[in-house]
Image (cartoon, rainbow, N blue to C red; front, side, top):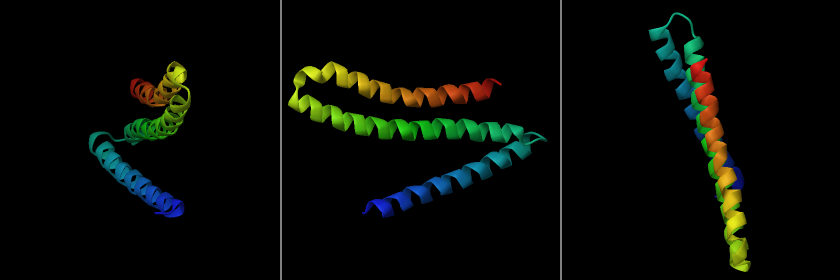
Length: 105
């Protein structure tokens, strides 16, 4: 697969998930409440968590690849590279934090 076809594939998947999550959230909000604000909150929570997890996965993949390459050449860099991979994993925690802040408001 070329990079442009892979990008189109991921864009298509993202659009399908976004439209379906919007439809489900909107149906739930109309069923439960007269206003649509609750549905937008759930959509915001889902997007913040999901996109942060995708970003964290991408960051961990790139930093992990670089960390393994660095450790192969210099084994004493293990501690530093683990720190960088851990920082990349923190991106997902920020997404969950934003979702929690949206939930409690």
